[in-house]
Length: 347
Ligand code: FES
Ligand SMILES: [Fe+2]
Figure 1 (cartoon, rainbow, N blue to C red):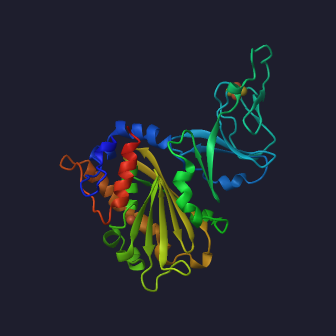
Figure 2: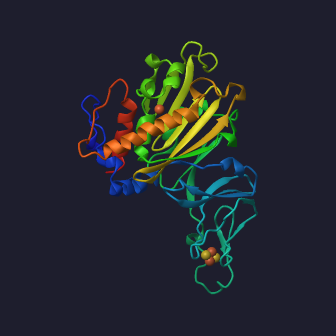
Figure 3: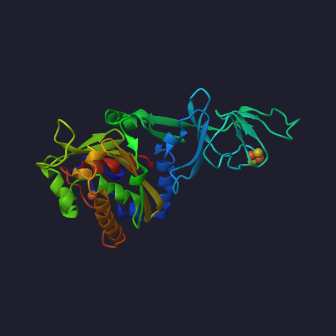
């Protein structure tokens, strides 16, 4: 499928409309793209203490893999399958601080590193316990203070996040008040397409357009994502010592890290169905006194403006008279790159 999108943006045509409306393709993307991607572990900061266990669902609503974050007595952090290797019960159903795990169905016990320690009524079972009775371990990636997990990643964590590392740090503090969940009647990739270009800003976001300098808006392509940089308009809020109003990182396939002088806004795009998408907002604050200012000021309003146009496009891609478009080389390089990465993973 990689051949669908020409490498030369001047020759390329955009994704066929079927990508946004075909349920079979949607299922293929769930397994080939999302089940093989790095996903944010929401609320991982709650597992800071030794002995913490924190059940979570990888990309809930899409990948839906039950996992368990554990921090052992030595402080080592791991992500394990939360499915008991006996008959499949969920091992842990609530966050706690424990010395070990015990399945609530028939009492199988595990260490916090996932090793099976034994269970009642299993005397005489040959070769028990063996490594196949341990809870499978999945990969973790740290991007302080954020944590990501992956079941079977198609690309390395560092290839995904290295360009973001300089922007992260312990100065970011989670703000539950800034959490939001939106649901829209549109395909997840339309939401990403829209995010990946600033082309629409003057048309769709009147107030945001006044905060940023459209002429200097730029997009850099990363191995597994993009970076968009917006400079502040005259008098607009910018990072100290610079003109930069926002750094917008897209981490393929569905994570957006938006840095503003006040802090970080994270959007996780969750494909629920071919034409239904959840967007989870998480907020980390660096400087509360700058909240509400600049390009990261009216995020709720900007979100609603984006949702309205993306839902309109979903109606458009159902048309019998539309299939594919073309890209603006100066303004849609990020969308083109995303389409290349996406089709490349479906071969
Ligand atoms: S399913 Fe866990 S002990 Fe039986
Ligand atoms: Fe937008």
